[in-house]
Amino acid sequence: MNAPSSAAAASGVAATATGIAAATADASATANASATPQAASAGLARFAAQLRFEDIPEAVVRRAEDLFVDWFGSALAGKGARPVETIARFFESMGPAGGPSEILIHRRTSSPMMAAAVNAASSHFAEQDDVHNGSVFHPAAVVFPPALAAAQALGRSGAELLCAAVVGYEVGIRVGEFLGRSHYKVFHTTGTAGTLAAAAAVGSLLHLSPEAMRHAFGSAGTQAAGLWEFLRDAADSKQLHTAHASAAGLTAAYLAADGLTGAQRILEGERGMAAGMSSDADEARLLDRLGERWALAETSFKFHASCRHTHPAADALLAAMRTNGLRADDIESVVARVHQGAIDVLGPVVDPQTVHQAKFSMGTVLGLAATKGSASLADFDADWRAPEVVAFRDRVRMQLDAEVDRAYPQRWIGKVEVRTRDGRVVEARVDEPKGDPGNTLSPQEVDDKALRLAQYRDAATAQETREAIRRIRSLARASAAGFLLPTKER
Image (cartoon, rainbow, N blue to C red; front, side, top):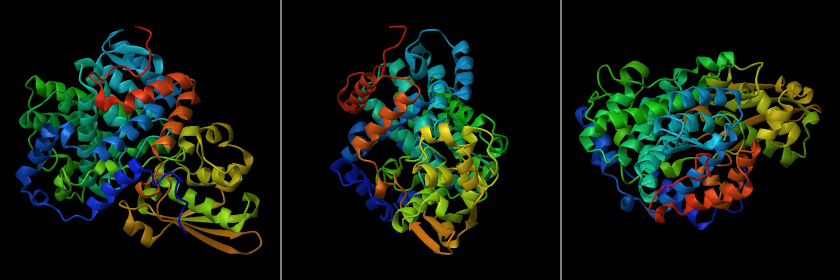
């Protein structure tokens, strides 16, 4: 049973971008994909350094704008969150008060490094930022913060900023795919591959040569970090991962511009990232159809305000309830049939202790979906510990499903088995969760989501948000990237 597609999913821009992803996914690999080990890092660096705005298909540019708007809303939604404010206080105390780059949640300016770190932390808190399925990687939170900060500091055009974002997505996604499933079992790919994504985006804005870009990759990769252990303790490290990746990648690019050298084979070398962080690395992924397959267009938007691993089951449960006229009280138990990655990440969260940890609890997410009809930011804030949600949570369990696991991570299938109190067994299936390229959000839905997120913590007024969205959607024609919001220093 498929989740209902958005009514606007067939709109011209969204449909075209989705078509690019679908068409290139079936294309045969080019000669680049079989490059020698010595050529992999060099080939990826060459692509990152040489891509120009005019090389990017218009539909991919339009999708990049959608993703930028989506990220902007997520960044504003992090305002006031304790971990975000703690990270922000530290970085703001380390940087200049006043600078060329904006810190969105506080309407202040600072150095590019400090602004990138704070904006990256804030955009990864609400669990509403985008995700690329095949790499299990959240590109926006580690690409847009350093790219925006550097573009503002360097006075780059809007087209250059968009090009840098595309470069960051294409590099980061391929590094995540290269590192594979074994990497994600222990490492938070957004923190690790994110350093390379940030370095690539900023390196593009700095106009690094292919050789210098390769050095930037080396310096970024040697700083790659992010472990999943924090989730067991409801610790705050997840936002630190994105802050560090953005700042470290930006640092690596600026240092390379000034002549600092880095490892030439940081990804595939004998003591590189794959050697230390993966047991199933696939080098062909690094150069997979560069310039033909646009991985950015494969990126999904988040619909529910929770870990993406919960979304397929949540959509399947809602479909089962809708089709069979079920209420939460009618349900005796739910089995969510999932891939191993979901068990690895969500399995330790049995009794969540914070609202953020609850977003990594399959039972809590399904409990909210069943009792409230959604799992939004407001639902989590108000009801993640409500008695009816906790009671439903305890009636949910996950089970590894062979078909779902084989399809993952390229496809995130949702399956549930629902047992009702009157003895029925109902099954439901969703092949493309809401927000995936085949079931995407239209540009208007993306704008509406950003407006909701901006107002969630009163980070921006509706008028300010609409004006920022207008600026983002006109970047391709802007002579300078500029600021998105009014700041206290201006």
